Amino acid sequence: MKYVLVGLTCVALILAFIGGSIYYKGLQVEKYGFMAEENAELFVRDHSPRLGSDDAKVFIVEFMDPACETCAAFEPFIKQIMDANPGKIKLILRYAPFHDGADNFVKILEAARMQGKYWETLDIMFKTQNIWASHHNYQPQRLWKILPRVGLDMERIKKDMHSPEIAKIIEQDMADVKALNVKKTPGYFVNGRPLQTFGSQQLYQLIMSELDRQYPQ
Amino acid sequence: MSQSDQAVKINWTLLFMGWLLVSVSTTISLFFSSVLEYEPCVLCWYQRICLFPMVFILAAGLFPNFDESVIKYALPLSIAGGLTAFYHSLLYAGIIPESIQPCSQGVSCTEKYFELFGFVSIPMLSFIAFSTLIALLLILKRRTSK
Image (tube, rainbow over all chains, first blue to last red; front, side):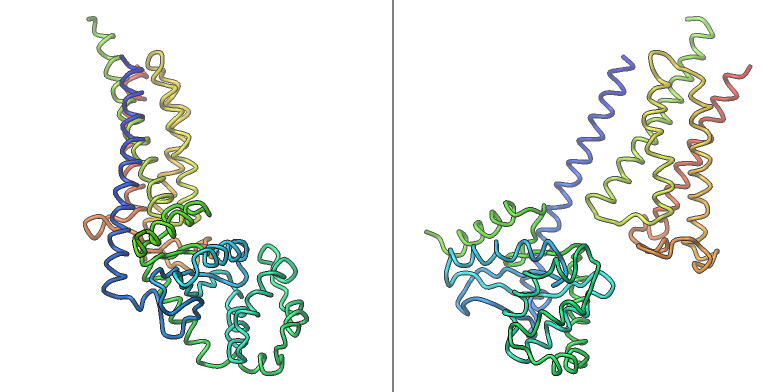
């Protein structure tokens, strides 16, 4: 009798926990769906860098940080899905430099954008990340030696990265990070639907389900 | 049923209520951190260290029959947790200034996540839970030390 009572209580608590999480996630999906409809600029700002066709109907919004290891690991995966579905997907990058000092790398990246070399710079930053940002041990001086490889004017980068426009972009993105309750990088939204549990498989399924919805066979 | 049988039964029920209290608190605490993704601050962690093991300690005292030595093991944890929760509540309410408290890194201990009915904060919930548990354990201590 005692064992049954305690056992049943444990089961009830576990079920309440699971039920609560399912309910909460449902609420979140609804909330983000509403936000995506009513307040689309929270997800995509005019300043946000984007990749892919203008006619694409599936928007992947990625909150990232050039110094984040998982973001670097996910980049080829996203590109692969985009290549497999040409013209249907648009990738929008938003910044979420959570770690102290990480915003400096966003500034460098944005300064490279002023020279028209955004995606090349991001690509080389991700590929050499283990050299200059291994486990959040930032070593910008190493990055300075790497960046000229993509043909950047480093003197201009050093000047441009402190421009107020770039500071404003980061400020706006961080405000949206807060509004959308993004806590980790990379944080994904596909057409306003959040990635509920993190993982490449889950992200793949989310993108695929949105592709099916927008492009019915 | 003899009188002492009755007394043991009441003791068991009181301890069961205590166990229920810590189990529900643990579930809520885990729900806050892993589902709602509220990052626990340093002081929250100290309280959790006191709270989580009590789920097992109190459960062990329930079987096979009520074991009064559980009081001896659970009281120090609940008092430590209760004191931390009390301090945390004062800090949260702004009665102690934040500058003299130990958690400068990570999440601030006065970060507002949730307030039930607009005034019951998480540290206050914790304080209520620990105080209730201390009261239950003290009642049990009295009932058993005759």
